Structure formats: C-alpha cells, structure tokens
Amino acid sequence: MKFFIERYSPHKTQENPLWLIVLSDIMTNLMLFFLILYVFSLRPESEAHAVFLNGFDKKHMEEEKEKKAQEVLQKFKEKDVAETLRDELEKAGLKDLAEVQMTDKLIRVNISAPILFRSGAAKLEPDAIKMLTVMGKLLEKLKQNDILIEGHTDNIPVKSGDYPTNWALSAARANSVVDYLASGFGIPQEKLISAAYGEYRPIADNKTPQGRAKNRRIEIVVTRK
Image 1 (cartoon, rainbow, N blue to C red):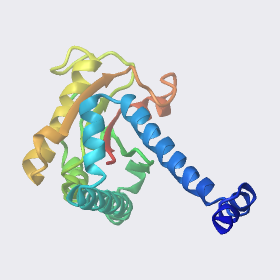
Image 2: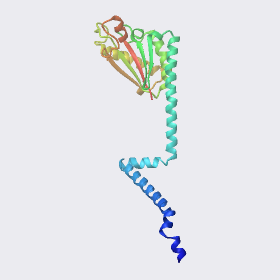
Image 3: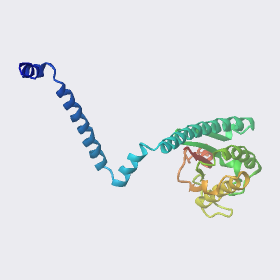
C-alpha cells in the first residue's frame, strides 16, 4: 500500500506529466478538425466536396501537372514564333514595314497598310501576299491561340472607291487578311477575329503626312495562353 501511494502521489505526477502531452495532442487535433470544418463552411457545399476529393485524386493531380507542363511548352512556342517572325521578315526585306512586339499577354505585329493595299482599296497587293505568307506559316503553329486582325486608317475622309467611310474601309481590309489566313494556312476560323477601328485609334499625329502613314495599318494580335 505504501508503495502504491508513493508511486501515484501528486509530486510524482508532476515530475512525469505525460498526461499533458497526450492532452496537447488531442487539443491540437481538435483545433485542426474544427479549422477544416470552418474553411469548408466558407465554400459552397459542392465546391468544398470537390476540393476535398481532388486532394486525394491522383488522376486529377497528374492531369494538373500535365496541364502546367503544356502551358510552359506553349509559352516557349509563342516566344519562338515571335522571334522567328522577326528573322523571317528581315530575310524577306520587310523588316522596316512590319514591327513585332511581344509582352506577357500578347504578340502584336504592326504592318504598314500601303504595302498591303492600294489607296481606298481592300484587295491584297502582291507584296501583301508575300508578307502574309511568311506570317501565316508561323501563325499556323499557334492554332490554339486567338488571333485578332485590326484594321486602322488615318483621319482623311474617303473620297473615292467602294467604301463610304474609313470605318468601312478598315473593316474590309481586316476581313481580307482574315480570309487569306483562314483559307491559305488552315487556321481555324473560330480563332480568327476581325475588328475595324477606322481613324479612332491613331498611334501617331494625323496632322503630318508621316503620322498619317503610321496610322494607316493592319495589326495582327495573338493572345498568349
């Protein structure tokens, strides 16, 4: 009896407080449990359930990894197309007539309109075919990307031709480029978008001949994935 009392006396318990460790573990687990419940309560039930299951879904995790890898490859492909386009335009002697810009969100090619069309017309000129052929072969590699074709003019009113306004002229020119890229290079039509801005988005001063020449342009904008 004396042995029993000495073994379980209060001072012995204080020297070896194992019960505190067990209690701490229990409290920690309870806190984590209620924290998870709270986080789930902030989401819609179906979404929370999906998130919970996806955490244990190896197939889903593998698909996400594959998706990330494809996104990285796509970025490299877009960069390669932009750099190759610059080189090809320079080889074709068209570097001064087309400017290639690339940002994190898009690739923009600014083409001087006089090389593409006669004044007041929307039919592609031979030099336009040469340039767009170079571009089409490269844009064909980016079939997953949306490609926007923008038509722009200066602010001088149209005095002759088949188009009553600068807006109508810019629309017809943009459509000509869209049709050529779609028919000549197999770029899906649903990825090609035509936009007409007429004189309303100038990049230079329309008060000078040099500024008006810069404003008469076609811009090809490739949105990056």
